[in-house]
Length: 69
Image (cartoon, rainbow, N blue to C red):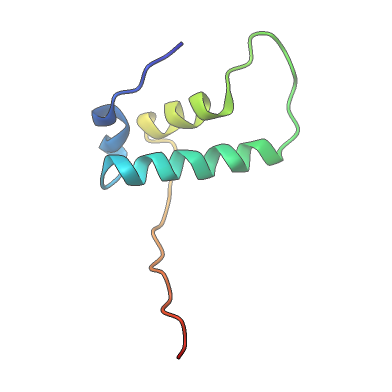
């Protein structure tokens, strides 16, 4: 099992909380694609955290819209 430290993951994001959200959303996107089931396949969250810590994921923070009153 690979361990990711908050410092590793947050190098390519603004902070550690944002980096976890980015990795979780990316893992959900990976889950939508068909994949080969094998014994050596990495879990999607591990793969997402690896790619984020390597700087392979590009993301854009979109501010939340305020509800119209």
